[in-house]
View 1: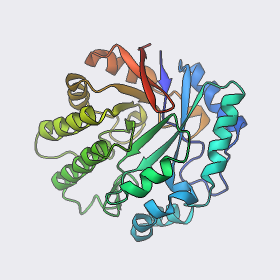
View 2: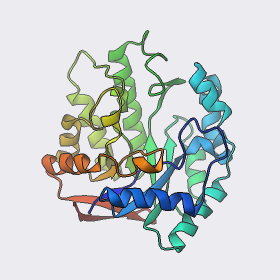
View 3: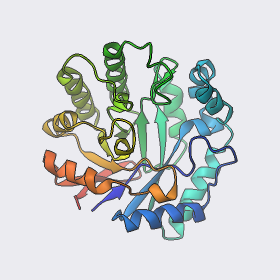
Length: 284
């Protein structure tokens, strides 16, 4: 079975109000089915919603760069209630869809994040690390990276990802080595950082996402790298699959390669969620 558990109903730079409707969700489900995915999960970015202002505003309001400033202006405009209602309506209409949300891990905001999440009937919650401090590491190769200490950036990214896993907030760790997106590589082996994240995921019960999105980014490879995926398997960390689609035509894109990578690492199942309860289903 192939599942696409990571997708967004709008592009990040969408300037109009978001189209949170069953009709929009149906487009994603149809495109994903053509790619072989039998079930999808809608996991909109948390910063879109007014309810997440207490979590994200400090980071976004201080972030530098035109792209992030524009992102901040587009944030906190939507109703989480309306989004949840749209996905639940799609479910009621028989679409093979799960209700999710992608939440940035912001140190010090664990309590308020947990309180917000508890109000809604999510099937699973995706946790991501997109920010080191106020630096949006995946926004542009021209933001932060030209002057960055790459070795330190990797250390800080994986430290935050480990904290995210240990927080207990998340069911899935998204694109677990996103820091490599623009092709920057550290000067040292990553074994210890990989093992720390895998150990934290195992101890917290979080699954790791195998994301095809990296295939279409400058790095040109899946998230996570084979070495990190092997660590997850060795530690007994379950996996999910995700395209990180931001348009219907990208739903399910590249998931056959993600599924192949899972099988080559030793996985025979993927994780399916319902009401934040995981089960294992045979990998397609």
